[in-house]
Length: 119
Image (tube, rainbow, N blue to C red; front, side):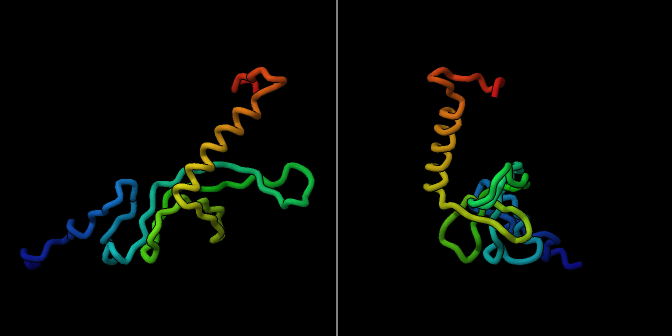
């Protein structure tokens, strides 16, 4: 082996996104790879808007994604089978605030807060 050629290329492994867990440079140049965060798994219920009943429990993964051919960073919710939806960061912030507001509202009963342990 030529000692002038290192086994690993640490310069290729650097990523400007602190949240990115992609192993850049292992197979291709970092500029040719998507940037992904470590995902968080959740179980949600889904159902068609016209359906009755509880719907179906589905496992989803939420994380940060910036594709190599995109100028924006997205919050992506992946449902499996190649299905996902993505939300722009500012919109994700607005959704997060609204989720907190609605969860607080849902815990209210006749104007009295219900403790989270009772829900």
